[in-house]
Image 1 (cartoon, rainbow, N blue to C red):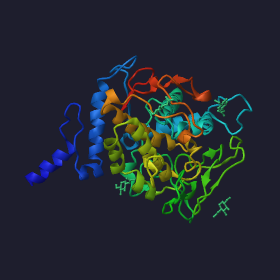
Image 2: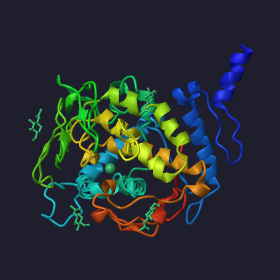
Image 3: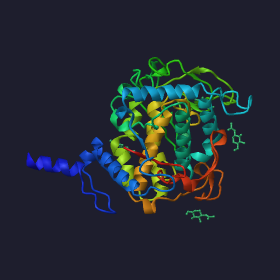
Image 4: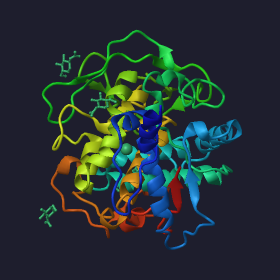
Length: 391
Ligand SMILES: *[C@@H]1O[C@H](CO)[C@@H](O)[C@H](O)[C@H]1NC(C)=O
Ligand SMILES: *[C@@H]1O[C@H](CO)[C@@H](O)[C@H](O)[C@H]1NC(C)=O
Ligand SMILES: *[C@@H]1O[C@H](CO)[C@@H](O)[C@H](O)[C@H]1NC(C)=O
Ligand SMILES: *[C@@H]1O[C@H](CO)[C@@H](O)[C@H](O)[C@H]1NC(C)=O
Ligand SMILES: [Cu+2]
């Protein structure tokens, strides 16, 4: 009994020695206790690094979806709907599929896909993109901060997740079930595809918020079930109104986005080069994996969620990417002195070859926000303008 308790405490409350990361038992890693412990260390360390305009009194806290009250979750959904009914920022006629400000986010992501994935700017570009989305929600009257979705809780049944259970306090349900073969993903350079067991949806979101949402942009490269082929529109910027589809795929969560996968990434990489590569399943470094990044995306799947170019067209995208940003933040603040750099070039898998990216380079958000230097996106508490942490 005593021994059991001792191991249990040792797993959950490791001694956080200055400058060194604690050792966790496999059980603590698999249950999420280790990740929670690492989050606490990152929180303590980030509170010591506040800079610029970021102070203890204006520090914002991003929380996991299920820790928000029902009222907070409903106000978040209301703000997303407000962004979806706000006018597009593009000059009239320039992007016909950008019917609302929400679609602008999709158009900008689509436009920059080949520069902000498997490149040096993946983490900081998405950090700025999410921050900008958060400010648009707040401009719509939302008083909270961007929530995140911890996939680790949902590996057995994403359908029953508070994020996707179809209740008024979710982001809407799974898609209606349509019998189909599984996804087959042929990642760049791979010879054999990653094959998933079919998801539990495939059709339109049938219940809860976003049941009647209209998707406008794309698709660009939507996987065709049971094949390694894709389908898309010749001009994805045109308006192509259709329902929001999901295909919640537990096989993706279980294989690529478990507590173990996330914790192993954080504890197993000590350079930004490897951290970003393992997170994305970069084929230049790993094979047979899509990383936690792909793991979360293909848990959502569907249209637009399963199309890498336009995945921000599903409101769940932002909670998934906030979790990725949280993992980046935890990793950084376990050794912040050594984790403020970027590595790589500005093109997808460095194709076509391009110069190394530096901290002085700018991140482009098109119509959504002004260009900003990467160095201002490195610390979430740097105050230029970021000032948030995760709990
Ligand atoms: C796409 O990016 C180019 C270059 O930055 C820009 O000129 C163009 O306006 C962008 N289009 C959209 C739809 O964002
Ligand atoms: C996939 O696309 C290729 C090339 O367009 C085509 O030859 C093949 O028949 C397609 N396969 C399936 C299963 O649709
Ligand atoms: C992810 O974690 C699960 C156990 O939680 C493990 O079975 C799987 O092999 C891991 N995947 C990768 C790519 O490490
Ligand atoms: C780009 O970065 C790589 C990795 O650090 C380095 O080996 C290479 O020399 C750099 N290239 C240039 C042109 O600076
Ligand atoms: Cu992206």
